Image (cartoon, rainbow, N blue to C red; front, top):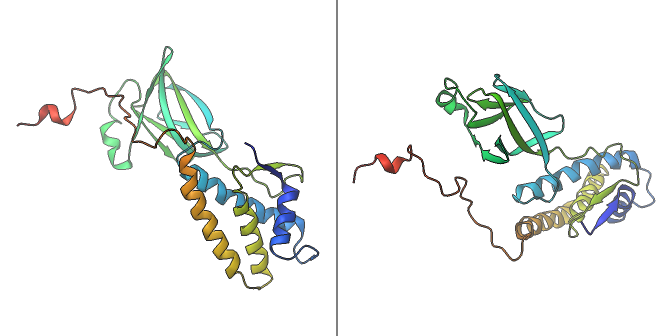
Length: 225
C-alpha cells in the first residue's frame, strides 16, 4: 500500500491531536496499548467491507477420518473452505449448528464446514482428502511493537487510529472528548462508504457460489406446476 507510518509517527500524531505533545501524563508504552486497540478497530472496518485489504492466510487440512482439525494460531475468521481434487478446488458450504444432522451421519468427502472454538469442523468427517482453508489472520498486537514497525494507512485511514488514540488520552485526562468523538464517527462513515470501492471499474455484485450448476436435489425439480 502507498501510505505507511511507523508506530512512533502515529504516537506523535496522536499526542499532537490530543494537545499532549510535552505531557508525561501518558507514557509511550501506554500509548502503544491504545494504538493496538485502535488499529484493531480499523482492521475490522476494512475486513467488514468484504474486500481484501490485508493478505489472507491459507491453511491446508489433510483429512484423517476425524471431523475436527485445529485452526491456525493466528486465526480470526474464515473466508472460504475448498476441497482439492487434482488441480481443481470445490467450495464447501458453511453449515449452521441446527443443520448438523444433514451431514454427520453421511460418509465420503466433506461438503460443509463450520468454525467451532479452536477447531474447523468438516462434515461428513472426511478421510484421505485435502482441503484449503482461507482465513482472516488476527490483527497484529502492537502493545510492545518497536517504534519503527510500520502501519498501513491505505488512504489516510490511519487517521481513525490517531483520533481514537487522542480520544482515549483525553478521556484518561478527564477532558472533553466530544470533538474527537464527532471526528471519529465521521471518519468511520467515510471508511465504510469508500472501502466498498476498491475495484473502481467493477461494481459490487452478488456471487453465484454454485457456478451456475444445477443439482438433482434442486427444489424446483420436485415442485408441481
